[in-house]
Image (cartoon, rainbow, N blue to C red; front, top):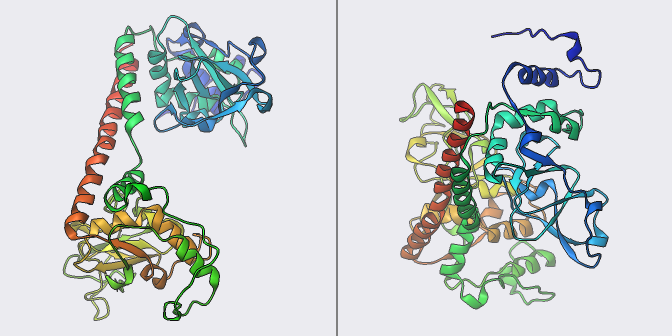
Amino acid sequence: MENVNILPYGALNGSDWTVNSLIVAMKINQSSRIPLSELCYINNTPITKVRLDSDKQYPYLEIKSIDVDKKMISNFETIQYGELPSRAKLIAYPGDIVLSIIRPERGAVAIVPDDFKEYIVTNAIAVLTPKHISPELLYFLLYHQTILDEFGGLARGAAIPTLSLRQLKVYQLPISKIPQKDEVARRMYGEWRNINKTSKEFIEIIEEVFQSFLLNQDDIGQETLEKKHMICEYEHLKDRLDASYHLGRHKTLVPWNCEIRELGEFIEYRNVPEVPYSNEFFHQEIPSIRIQNLVEDAIEINLEGIDHLSCEATSEHGRNQYIRENDIIIPKHGGSVRRSNLAGKSLQGAIVNQHLYVVKISQQLLPEYLVMYLKTKWVQDQISINLGGTVQSIIKRKNIDELRIPMPSLEIQRQIIEEAHKRNDINRYIDLKKKEIMDFVEELYSRY
């Protein structure tokens, strides 16, 4: 591995002496490349060159409008022309490519869709208009992380690294000739766009399934009602005499079409110690679950990155205190309850740190059903009320016990679980399609 790079003095152009920029410049000079400016026009249409209707609403693209993971435009505002911010400088048309010049290595790149005739674009984004290449092929050429990293190496500014227009215009793609892959690129992008239009986050899927099974059609969207007064029987006040608490709980009542019970009736807490005592499952090293191992978009705990601690001698205190299969791990931080996960068989015998609860559930609840419900907005609303309007505090056992949960039959619970997994299958297909795209992009650069 080379630790020293020698550059001629002329390479120090006086305007950019940063190490990353010089290394990228050296790579460009050492390989056969095609200038990006030969493939596209860059910022070809300033807003001042186009006559726009001052009374009309226009779609406005910012960096946050680009989904970095999907590399597609997913969210934007429509703003009246006269109310556009001062940084609205460019016009983009369907088929143009937008690329964030601020922290470009993040990969905020997308093809402008044909939903509107024109888009107004912030000056934090470069607009690339393809010349003799399809938008899809140019998009995939810019998709590669190596290219994005080179853009990041050229970006200047300690606080907000930014790629200049001049740097973009002189940049050269590490490819010797343009691959004749336009048709393949069009097909792959079309498939990618179509599946992403129908994909949803796992939590959104879960909430839709709960609604379809346990809410009447007329009640969907009416789960919460604003109440300024209520009558509450004294026996239901328990030890909470503050009116805001009870009004809040009443506000979060959901008209489920089944019995509603408090979660505390069906769970039992395990006192799992942090000390890694050996047990019948682990004798040398024992898995220790932390909140970092819990994920929102999955049911079971992520097995990657779990710490393993050296076991200490067995003690009477820790002999039987460990995670069992189908236990549920719940974060103690109110804002992280959506990361509640199920412990699978491989984690039987593991321990947790002090920031997590471990609960065993009764046979009236299916473990997966409860984990799914804990991820929903209805639980978040209740926790916010219980914690005085914020989810940033530590939740106590009492807060968990008071959570109201719909209790359909076990058969309905199974159907809800099956339907949620069925609807989530498209997300697994997205992962496969993303790998296919990455293989295609790798081939473009390896063969050409």
